[in-house]
Every structure is written in C-alpha cells, then in structure tokens.
Image (cartoon, rainbow, N blue to C red; front, top):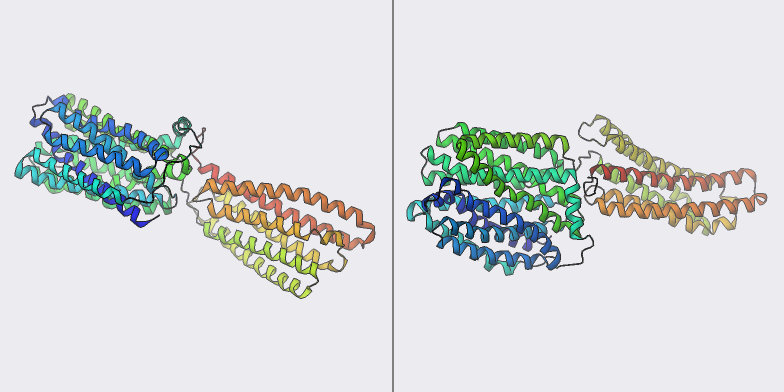
Length: 593
C-alpha cells in the first residue's frame, strides 16, 4: 500500500481526532455551564454516538459504491459544519445538534479510512492500529490543549481548537490519492449485513467493540465530572485525559502488529483484563498521580484489543464486501457511545458516579467471558507454517523435474533423464528433513489448535512426493520397453501433475492471509485431479491394448508407474481437502458463523 496514501489518511484522522478530543475535557462542563439539568448532561454525547454509528454504516456502503476518497471528502465537510456550530453553541440543544454534525462527519471519515487502509488484507491490523493510534493521539492532544485553553480563556474558546484542526484536515484531503473507486457489488448489501449478523464471531466483535465505546463514554462523560468532584483543576483533568489517550494511542500500533503474528483472540482477552483493572483503579484512587497511572492503564487495555477487533472482519470478508462489513462493525461499535451515555446517565443520576464505574466493570467482565467462550481465531498461529511452505514448494519442484525427466526419456536423452532422477531423490531427502522437523515442532507445540490437521497435511504432502519418486523408479526400470502409445501421453501426465502441484503450493501460500484465494486454488486442484482420473482411465486402456506386446514384468512396472502418478495427484487433492478443513475452522464469513 502506498506510503503517501497512508500518511495522508493518518494526518487527517489525527487532526479530526484532535478536534473531537476537545470534547473529552470540556463537553460535560460546557453542558453544565449552560445550566443543563443533570439528566441531560449526556445528551450531546448521545447525539454524537448515535449519528457516528449510523454514518459508520453509511460510510462503508459509500466507500464500496462511490469510492473511498469521495466519502472521505463528504465527511470532512460535514464535520467542519459541526465544529463551527459547536463554537457558537450556547444551549444544550445547540450542543446536541452540533454533535449531530460532528458525529456524522467523524463516522464517515473514520469508516472510509478503515476501508481504504484494509483494502490490502495482509498487515491490515497493523495499519488499522496505526490509524486508531493517530486518532487517539489526536484525542489526547485535543484533550490536553483544551484544558489549558479553557483555563485561560473559557470553555467556549476551547472549541476553536476543533474548528481550526478540522479545517486543516479539509485542506489536506486533496492529497489523498490512490484509493479505490466504486465498483460492482458482487454480494448485495443486505446479504453482507445479514451474514455479518449471523456470524457468531463477528457478533462477538460487534458486542466487544460496542462495550469498548461504552467504557470510552465513561472516560469521556463521567470521568471528568468524577475528577472534578475529587478537586482536580481543568488543567489536571486535561492532563489525565491526555495521558489516557496517549497510552491508548501508543499501544495500538504495537498490538496491531503483534496480533498479525500471534492472532486476534489472545490480545483481546488480555486487553479486556487490563481495561477492567484500569477502571477499578480509577474508581478507588483519590490522588492525582494515581489517577494518571490508572487512566494510562485504562488506555493500555483499550489499546491492546481496540485495533484487533476490526481486523477480524478484515481477515474474513472478501474485498468487494469489506467496506460495508467494516462499516457494519464500526456502526455497532460506535453506537456504544449512545448506549453508554444512556446507561451512564441513568446509573449516575440514580446511584451516583461510583455506581457507573462498577456497572462498567461488570459489563466488561461479562464481555471477557463471552470472548473467551465464543470468539473464533481468524489469524491462527501455525508454528510450522513456513516449513509447510517449503515442503509443498519442494513437491512442486520435484513434480517439475519429473515432467522434464519424462520428456528427456521420450527424446532419448538418457543422461538428462538420470540427472533429473538424482535431483528428485535429493529433494525427496530434503523433504524428509522438513517432515521430521514439522513432526517435532507440532508434537511439542501447545499453541496451535490445528495440530492434527497440520500433521495430516505434512503426511499427505510427503506421501505425494514419495509416489512421484516411486513413479520415476518404475519408469526408469522399464525405460527400454515403453510403448510409443504411452510415451505420447507423457506431456499430459507431466502437465497435469504440475498443474495439481502448483495449485496446492499456491493454496498453502495463501491459506493464512488470503483464505478465499486459497480456496480458489483448491478448486483448480480439484479440477486437475478430475482430469487426471480421466487420463488414468485412458492410460489403463492403452496398457490393456498393448499387454501382449511387452514383457509381463515391464507391464507390471508400467502399470505401477501409471498408478503411482494417479496416487500422487490423489494425495495432493487430499492435502487440499485438509487445507479446506483448516480454513473452514477459522472462517467466520458464513451464515452458520
């Protein structure tokens, strides 16, 4: 993916994050300053979250229909309109209406950025982590700056930060280039949403993301009021919010890259645990330094799992539907601002701010249990994956040598035939070494839940190699008695075996990062196996017709040669079936989830 595209998007989302981060410090106090009743303090946040969630959904659809860049520009214009109105707002109603525009614009901007950065699936979690890091560094910067501006000039003037940074992002937007333009929808939008809602794993990510935004609503809406009650000044509140958002932002690129290596589930579980510890510490602490420490802990917890959740969708969904699928994820997640504000407003007004913290701890604990039980790993850890790549690549090279050996035998170049036989044997020994190493690692590994399937894959591939070597030895022993009718089919034998081996190799190369492409290669492997079945029958017919013209021993050897070639292709298909099984175990993009 082009660096200029990534850099432009990261700059825009940072500035928009700064514009929104102002509200984390001053929105609650601004609502109080316009003499809003306590039960209405969360209304501006609710309007922000509701519209952001809805526009997330629309943004994913727009990105797939009209292109990423057009949707991004529209979101920026809407956001600037909201920022202007925020500065001019002097009632709770105007604050809420302004946040309708701000939430709508941010939803379009961020959902479009998600889509643009995940068009290339490999490394998607790292890029999404980088984007979220930029967003929350912006939130932290805006929260910190607004604390100083509010203390010096008043709450209203803090919104000038929102206005200036959003206008700056609008000026940067023409630099965004190279994004995808709208294309044909292979999967209807209703089916994309239906399949997302029917997938258990994707539903778990929606719920977890939704709860994460409810927790963020606690930090945004309840926490500043709680800190103010403890006696912290606006500057200290701004610093505390800045520390939270900065720790959040700094951990997201790290966790995104780690999850691309070790998988999605483990970081999600660890992040939720740290998140809970942070909220518990925030509730129980009374000192400024302790509050900063636990707010940082809260940010670290969010940073560990926040960029990992959308990567599950990026792992699972084909490119043509990924924009809408990510839009659905972001909508379900960001609606947590609205439900979080509603929940926290009710609990805080009825039982006090401390009960809101306790309620969020219980909700996050429930989410943790659900994730442990139901979240399926879409980025599996295969400790022997690189060895499987080498193993199947050796199979392909051996089959290529075998084809060339057959052609050399047909042309009468026995010296080349023998040289290629030596190479086949040497590569077969190398394959044995890979097989032994895979067995050792798989039997000693406790990380992979695909242990038995990986063992079967290694075994089938190894046997396919053995049958190729066996076929070479049989044809070598009978090389002086091969009938012309059989020699004329050497091209068909070699080409078909190479096609099957190539399809298997490319399937293994894509099974971890691009499972849908891997399945396409498996379909080609299945077709190659069916064609070899037909060829096998034709070769047997030839042998029946010429059996009286050759020595019985040679006839047996040639029959074994034909059967060994057939067995090798069958084993390649068996390997493909195992790959298909492994992919299905980690697939979440289906009606049955």
